[in-house]
Image (tube, rainbow, N blue to C red; front, side):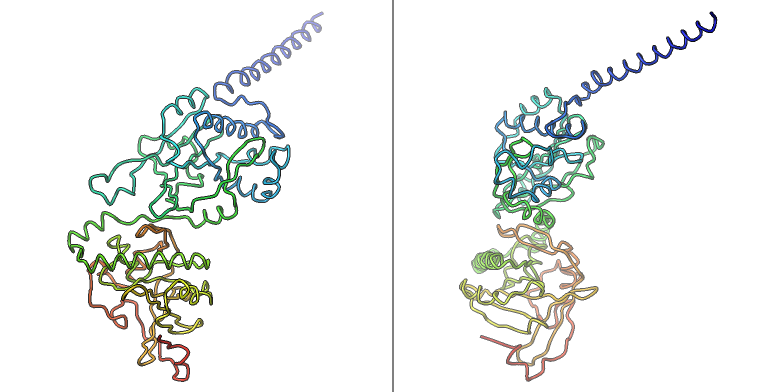
Length: 461
């Protein structure tokens, strides 16, 4: 009898433990998970509850914005990379390529969308509605760089990024602004001291580590995983653009300080030259863009952007740099067709190539081709009368976008090192008397062209 009682007791204890365990599981599933906004049923074709969570968060976010008439488009590189592989099928199928949740259920901590500032007035009603749906949100603001050149408006802040979080997934909404150079710009994501740095894994975000510049995308409305969403019409082009999107703002404060020491030349001649230089630069940029040739501001034009955010009026020319690997034989005929006759051609593709085209009046366009070595790059120069060759050495650099005379254009990202290499430590001091053979800080003798090559390497028109 004693043995039977012991078995009954053990059975009752086991049953009690099992009931308690089931109670804990139910409590977590139906109370704690709902409290944290994570109670989602499995989505279409998903393989796990975690996958479904991402899809549901995106769906609720898109529904929220649609109810407030706020258009956004997908710029998430992970999803666009998957979409790009199936882009033809997605374009041809109004209901998406397959019933499986393939794109928005892919493993990731967040999904990234873009918002054009001019399409929304940042109404607080959106955030109230978001909170009612269970979203937590964070707004990141900073100074508007477009106003830094205006003393009375400098310091005004604008929204740059929004983060919406629900359950274990977050939506990163990047705000794009249209710049005067007819391109889109987004600002950096800089957290202020009072902000919660644990809100999301900010370091993993794909946008915001630095400002970015993009062409205005043509958008395509598609169905992905049963969700209607806008994407760049050519995802591969957008992803390529994203990898080279870093933007440098002109140094407006330093420019104002420069003009306090050296008042700007506002004479009629200076105003006229800047007008012609701007027109010439825009024409050159369009011509090279049509050829698919990447270029950047070089020499005095780069110095003018970096030092005073404008064309140097006494420079008398526009200077551009191109890597020799990007050279195309179509460059000369393309500029001639654009109305810019060839003024001179020095060097050859293999060595010290330099082109000069005649612009309006006495303004000319100089294009210097850069050659890459193991630890430096250089461009060449040629003295027509003597056949002497010169070499100008620069530290290696990468290219960033900037805005200059209402144009989206490249400059060396490492601009200070680039300018110092050419103009030395005193680059801040204007120099009106400049000898291209001896004044540059980085110039070296590079021998003499053989006389029998002069007809080919020294061509003046």
